[in-house]
Length: 113
Image (cartoon, rainbow, N blue to C red; front, side, top):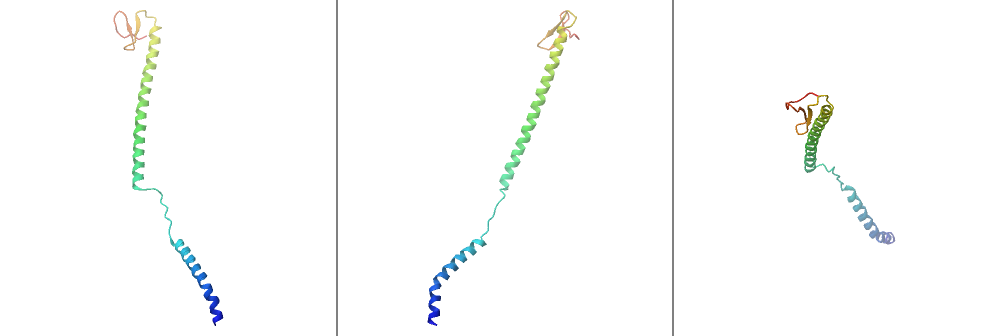
């Protein structure tokens, strides 16, 4: 019996070390890994504020573009009217650049070129 116990006693430290390694591996398996989506109240609020700012700037850009388009249309119409006024057969017609109208030299009234 002594011969049987001696090899077992010699293997006891190895068995103890193996059991420690196994218990650590088991503990590693029971720990959880939590991956968050990054979606928090603060990030949602930040995204909402960015969207609101984007909508405001888009509205402002639309207003600016509309105004520029109206100014362009007015200049385009005035350019055409100036050409018609200068090419008019009425010798008393002249182009007033401040008011952008075709006027009669004698009366100062608007003339249809």
